[in-house]
Image 1: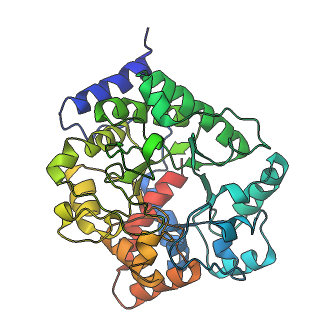
Image 2: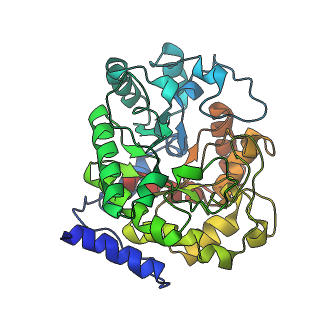
Image 3: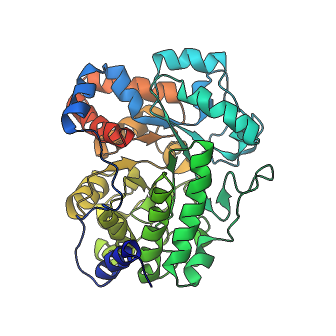
Length: 396
């Protein structure tokens, strides 16, 4: 027999996959009340511009060590050899010095930043002591993207793939997966898991999503996505659905260069948006953008991460999403091959992004936002809009 919570999740997914426009309800099971609006406003009023801008950056630890230089002109991914070999696994003096001037809202750890439980137990308190009170983030989807479970020094449950879970047809298996992952992430000290993948894997030639997605059928994927989110939430970890507006119909990998979907918005509404609507209706706190172009929606080859049509008109306007929009890593080739660091950072914020994840050069990106506010390219009120959302999340 289904519990009341399971029944609610099931009903949300049924309503959405049946074609109704439910996009505004929230997940109020076991609610964690955010700080009152006046508290957030009071906190915001006390912050300097640099402190506010810092909250909008979530970076890898290496971004704070300006003695490290990456030779990756075509973009970057977490498995790149010269990143992996650095093995930055502690906060050093350079990082502390840079952080004094460049506060940061979040830190994401990759596999090479994590050695074993003892090292992680030392590293996380060091990160928490950094200026900006950063949240701790990780990509722990389960399957091939699992920084901790796939580390032989940890003894955590491994999952074949989300595709295998989707193939069971039972959303309770997605809940169990999310809850198991969330439980050990919470135990180690993480706040945010950049999971689950909400893409619908409709293109058999897709080389980057594949079995990371629950299904090639949105009606199957949607209840899996929200049950996984609920599993994380019940364990005390915030999930993030990705990669909006859907990376499942592409062939190329945005880690290394340009990728596109030729779908129209109506076609996306019938497929990709089913899972994202389900996540929004459930009450997801973060949605991660894709760097893919959707020219038949936007009329251009601009990446969705930098498109106000995608982020403001579609995601916020049409779908009614009110919470945090975070970019996929801005150091990926789909961005760096078309834009310099300053252009990309300012461009995505102007398009509607709240959090810039993994800029290619954190210091340059930060300085570019400060300059953009000072010269009027971006208003400070625009910065405040994003920081309000971030402070509300941090208050939970």
